[in-house]
Length: 227
Image 1 (cartoon, one colour):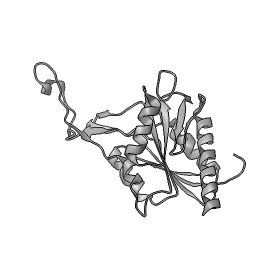
Image 2 (tube, rainbow, N blue to C red):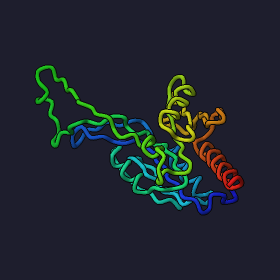
Image 3 (cartoon, helix red, strand yellow):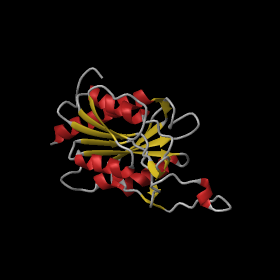
Image 4 (cartoon, one colour):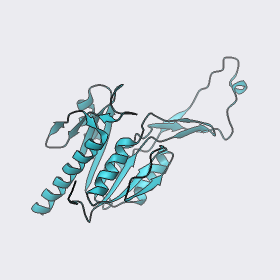
């Protein structure tokens, strides 16, 4: 993007997985690489926005011109997100774990502690819902809240339902398969807004980020023209 249409706006992006401890050496996580969120943070910065990227544990380098905050758990991420509100744009790309261990062990769980059958039962409790939390109307709510829905089936229907349930403005339906989504270079996404469902061709995560940034810039240009 040669122009910088988002100059003067602030953006918050979440990326990567969260990591929920079971004991000091084991944890619950998922396969998110963080690539899509990092690409979006970079594209927003290239368009002139002042970007804060809140990232779960990944191995990617920090994007240029972006403030990077590294976190581990969903609770850590929520704390970091709310500390950086209000902002103009929030893009919640992170694959936040839905559950965490209710009582993580303070020492490594040993096999001999598990009884004769070696079974381990974990009591899981829900993690905070970051997207839903920041979508609630309030003075701190971002002007545009965009969520991501990683789905393996009924992709658009599930994502449309999620948009309404979470209360965000846009939802990006993100197809996850062997060749798309987590740990891949390409993504197949559908942008769902109150006005339309727009299916995009499979493309690189960098191109997805640039196209989403163009849509965001057009949204704010229209908002400015009608205000």
